Length: 290
Length: 327
Image (cartoon, rainbow over all chains, first blue to last red):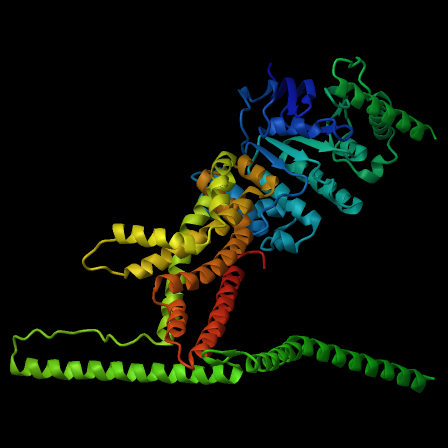
């Protein structure tokens, strides 16, 4: 049986003035319908590149992505993206931002009143119905990100792609947004791929955590199943043994094992970067031991 | 104790009030007093300097002479209008009388061909500059948007723009004049050739800043917004309409302001050189006239030209404020 979304044998090579740079090497991932996947790894490991390839914004150098047995060739609303810095159109109100997406996706399928209801429904889902006629400049960062999520949800995507959606928010707002996202997810049961730096966020939200090795030639290092029961409560989980085990698994991967096993000597630039990452990991180990 | 604190707090409030009043005074002085002082000093220096410059047409005009000429120019305008009215009245009476005698007579109506007054020249100049500027905008904004969207088109056109941008209107004018008189041949022209000449010269000189600024505005749109457009699969037209235009409006208006400034300067030069009607021609005619009032009248025109240039710029700014989301 083929899976819902399949990333197979993806390489990504960027041409640079100093020669080609292989960001991703042989990335393989299978995702089932309704699964919440987190991609975690150090910065610069190519998480965003993976997401952009699934979104269709980048073309993989080799290999490819198959969604519902069709190859992904270009961006489209069935793979809605929530960008890191909201990227709402600043000249449109929250309502109009969602409207632009809804009109594009549902024109001919919905009449005007249905569209209006659908837009308002999605804004209610992210608790933004009270400020839907405000422009992005008039609302806080967390609220903007909520509208960004509403816009993505309103496209009724097959896969929701989130590129560090809460990365730019303060810790309290972030926790609040995570709870909101879990609440929405329990209603809609979307297929989600989320990029994150945050170990707690990954364990709290995901069904699977995909841990990526350091670049260049980054790939999937390990996949961790998160079997914690839903609904999850962050306070209760803080004492939970399984939660803490998962958390330390991810930490161990990130700070001890993230070095790739094979040596990379062919590419000078690559080996240099490898040295740097090794140094980083040594420091990290020191840090975690102390 | 209580009364003591209340006295203290009263004193504080009093101090606060005083500070607020002082702040208001400084603000007012910045807004009105300082510009006023600046202008006053300028007028004094102008008067003093003007008095010490002797020309073949008499002393250089000071502010008082210029104000006098403003009055003269206005009364000349009124007199000319009265003459025109009288002319039309006579013509109407004559025609009425002839039609009364002979019912088959087709009345001939001729326009008044009196001298154009200063105010007529201002209107002519304004119409010419706006027409030239609008034509430039109609060409420049779509072209600039297209260039901003396509790097290859930008690479192809950029050298041409960079070469033509610094060209003086005086170099274009003879070419424009010759081409217009060769191409624009009509027995019954809707607008005069001289109008077309000035307008095209204005367009040729004011089109470049608008193209450049629009192209820069469009090509520097946040890549996240472009990605949103890609994910939504917006059509090219919707993409331009919903994303590109609103995002680049501030830069487009910057280009328009630069262009209109250039257009106004170019127009005056073109009118002077080509004897096209307008403020430039007024200045040139007065110079050729060489009466004792000429310099004061030219100086009056200079003030008016400056003031209109300022108003045009403010007009575009107001338009931007009205159109732009970024207030």
